[in-house]
Length: 151
Image (cartoon, rainbow, N blue to C red):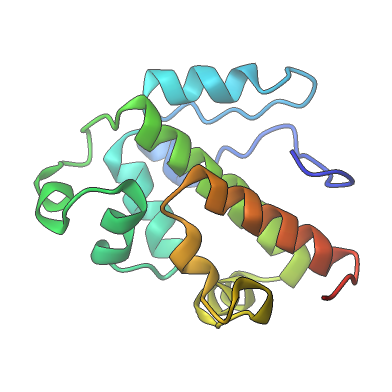
């Protein structure tokens, strides 16, 4: 996790309750709850709801999971994503939570995801969400913004 970031005891959203997804990110557990949630799988319906809050298209959501658009369209809301895909969903939820703290609102964070960033060689943060390393880079960048450190 990133230094200095205040973790909430739980990031369970309304969508998680609707889709019965156990996204419990409990501080002090060394991330074991996150690992258990990823291994158990996240329902596609939860991922689509998260994507909606972020203003992401189905194509963008498919790219994040490294699946074709058609494959994502075939999944029903109850389909359980595999452990790697679920880990990306959890990482996206955590990135969004940090981004909301940094930018103060959903729309501001959503806009940041789509705006080219000089530190990312003028690529958009959204273009980095296809790998776990991309999530780490974005977490570091949010931490720099949060602490007023600019390159």
